Amino acid sequence: MGNSYFNTYTQIHIQFVFAVKFRQTLINPVWKEDLHKYITGTIQNKTHKMLAINTMPDHLHMLIGYRPVDHMSDMIRVVKNASRDWINENRLTRLKFEWQDNFGAFSYSKKEIPNVINYIETQEQHHHKKTFLEQYVELLKEFEIEYDERYLFKPLA
Image (cartoon, rainbow, N blue to C red):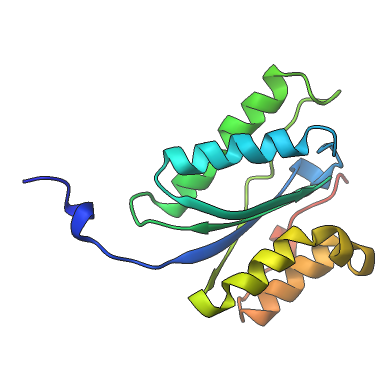
């Protein structure tokens, strides 16, 4: 019989965005590349392909070639839990590290991929002009996604 996924052909590109709990600035430039490698390995172990990843101190962007072998929420939960545990086990932050529960997912056509990769790789420049929340709301509006402001990534109250 074999695995039915071997005969499934897809081209799905998704940018995921998620934040550190309460948007705390806990991701340090000193170890962020190691975090990117760790998350890339987690994504690849789930049979997806990492196309771009970048973090700011309070959030993460990644673009993946998504294979329909996982439920998206399950895959993100695995990525968040594994990376959280890796950060905490290596004591990379003074405080206990947590990701916020929610995430954004935005799909792109193949011709858009170079621009999305550039956007992710140049996050530092984008955030000189806009905050993370401004940028995230802009993505939601661009994709015409209805949202409730009460459930956007929350800062520490």
